[in-house]
Length: 277
Image 1 (cartoon, rainbow, N blue to C red):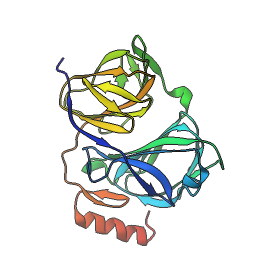
Image 2: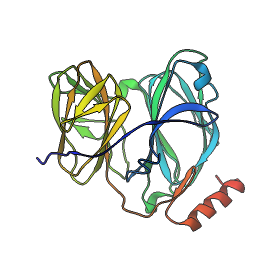
Image 3: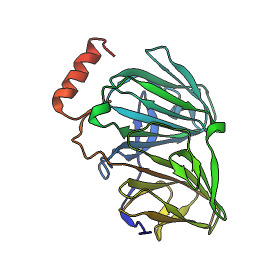
């Protein structure tokens, strides 16, 4: 198997979104605008309610998918179609916005740690106007597999070591892994050839990815290849390893709308203003 290496690395930058939720933006910032098919990656982590209590009030989406992965805390989501759900520690929501939805995510706690990620995944042109849908996944539905001594993977999407994650029917055929590595533990992890892939260290001081030290809050964009080697640092480490099939289509983007042409963006804005979501 050909080994992937690091072709670019970036650190998350501090910003705010929603009604003032403080977060780190890793994809969707000046140093890494997009990574086809991935449009955005945010990490929110704070034990100060002032940083998250205002949440993400109702806002529109069209043309892509949002993936929320909670590590700690409790959020409630709702939409203008009457869907409601709770996101607690270890849960995942994969929302396909499709032709349009008005969505909110609001904290259900006034103190304590709120920690998690939101990833935006683009939809192919043929699916941008599909009907919206949710995949709400409780922690107990996410399988774990040991990839090597001291290397455990939660498989959220895709297949790894004979274990298949619960997320289904995604056009970009994603792999989404939460890796827990003991100090010095090492695994060679296969990834589909042709998929775009990244690794992000989110807990512990550092990990080794493709032979290079990657610090906390640092993302590595991986080269083409069939596998990547990941190793723990001097303390227990957790790493997101994510891959997806590039769409190689034009991207027209305006805030919460992601289409293929400027004309489609204008149509999305008009539909939103006219209440057609």
